[in-house]
Length: 231
Image (cartoon, rainbow, N blue to C red; front, side, top):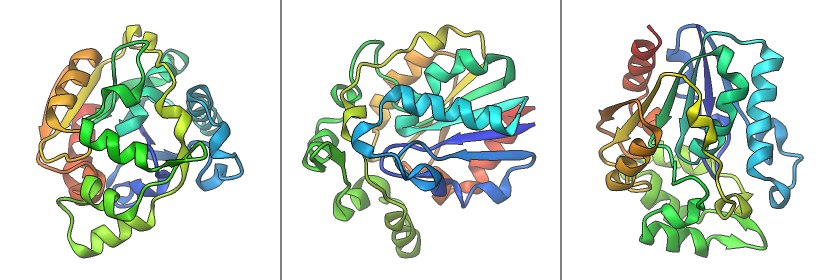
């Protein structure tokens, strides 16, 4: 059994650090291009295809099998096209408050209007750079001061173009069990939008009482859920 974790926009693999020690089996937290061990990539040049390729590359390099693939937030549109390439290795795909808009649309068009305005204000010169105040409101609404400080320290620059590329959801046709996890206190990707994405994803839906960064605020509950889904 192994777990492969894909982070959302404006952060890297480090966002999974509170969860990793709680998972049983092999674990891989992917750094998408432009951050972490792939920080040499210019964020302004990164595409959705680059992100998907990074996931496949890391899985193949680690030679992982029997995988529970976990896509958080923006990673919904990264994990989906990776599903056919990894189909023979996947046991389950988990969409954790993941952004999965209608096929062929843009992520930016599908998010909450208030969040969209904050995101658009955070784009400069092709780079999406989150303001700590806005990020605190969107990501940390259920965190204590220590968790909030840690979370803000994890933020990185990201590619603004990823928000405006048309998404390819053909990977959802792969015959792989999947579960959408809806987070009831999420201020970044509100419950109504999660409901729409869950309908696009199909499969099962479960609920956790958490804000957007459940792997930080309730890592024990996330780990228990992932272990249950892997059984």
